[in-house]
Amino acid sequence: MTQKTAQKIHFVTLGCEKNLVDSEVMMGIVQGKEYTIVDNAEDADVVVVNTCGFIDEAKAESVETILQMAQLKESAHVKSVLVAGCMAQRYKDELMTEIPEIDGIVGTQDFIQITDLIEESLTGSRPQYFSAGNPIYLYDENTPRVHTSGNISAYLKIAEGCNHACTFCIIPTMRGKLRSRTIESIVTEAEQLVAQGVKEIILIAQDTTDYGVDVYKKRRLADLLEALNNVEGLHWIRLHYAYPGFFTDEVIDAIARLDRVAKYIDMPLQHSEDHILKAMQRPGHQAGVRKLVQKIRDRVPNVALRTSIIVGFPGETDEDFENLCGFVRDLQFDHVGVFTYSPEEGTPSAQFEAQVPVETKERRSNILMEVAREVASQRQARHVGEVLDVLIEKFDEEDPSIRVGRTQFDARDIDGLVFVANSDAAIGDMIKVRVTHAFDFDLSGEAV
Image 1 (cartoon, rainbow, N blue to C red):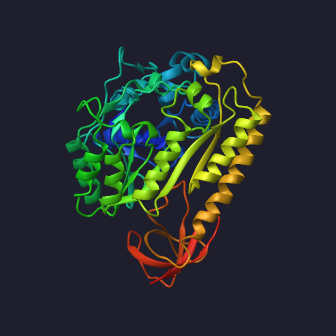
Image 2 (tube, rainbow, N blue to C red; image 1 turned 90 degrees about the vertical axis):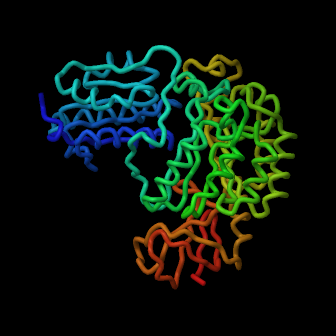
């Protein structure tokens, strides 16, 4: 059999940050078995494609990437192409039948067996690793993990799976029911990340506000934030994917009170109109959401709010869409992610009547993105003249004398940046910056 030490492995990660953490765990396992991880697919003996299967565009990208990697078996020295992740979990039989170039496949519950998959695939056996029954796997602080997203910030997955039954979402089918890690496990991993130089941890799960209900029989996100706030060396603890249904007063108070918790909340609302929310099986209603947002803004001054919106859900009328645009204007979100509805196979909403034409969905998406841009520009302007803490992440590519970073009001990769003049700060430094200019999404200023 080919010696493990001779194998070079390349990982391609598609989809969300939760997938990225899974890839980093696979890298940790592979590296622990004396394989070599390489940055370029052309240099690899084995390529692992960690797929996304959430919406049609993601599935198409996954298939295209698999085929691109398979071509390297002809033009490079790639011997094996393996497929992991959500699309593998959902469509394993179809993938193995319709793409014979795939040399092995592993589901979302079994990727910890990645080294066995690699070895077996190199024998030509086309192995498949999928556990039967309800998903139970959950990584913890003892699981090997290679941190790939730089030394500044890191994603920390606090739970796996989801207990909700949103009619447009296939995640519970692919990932199973909610499985929360313990507070002790999460805090230990946070301490490990800080020891590696991480300044910011970004808490992720399918719904972070539901955290702990399975392990502790009650939701304990506020307690988790309190525990993480005691981790020395952390600058920011950032909260993503906090559904509105379980956003308690305790969580709001924790965000307001704890000094290391960023005054930033990612709260996916998906829509404004009550009949659409009901059809989506989303928690709450518009009046409750408006009251919650006002309560957050009252208790957490200057908080930045991000949300995600789906346009073109079945039954959405022109009037519904106009109301949605007004809702975004009224609530003054700092950041809005706009997505067009995708009728996913196996979801209830795919069978709903009154599906919205594709061209209408796309037109509405463009309009709402422009509304969101206008609102974001207005929100950014409030920072001009303020002195803000900025975490430096890189040097400007065109002018290395300019430092580029983020405030606590912007998440990495998806929100705005701050361009800083008159600073000799190093990457990873937290500095004071007086904001002089505001743009649609970015800021610029001078080091104080």
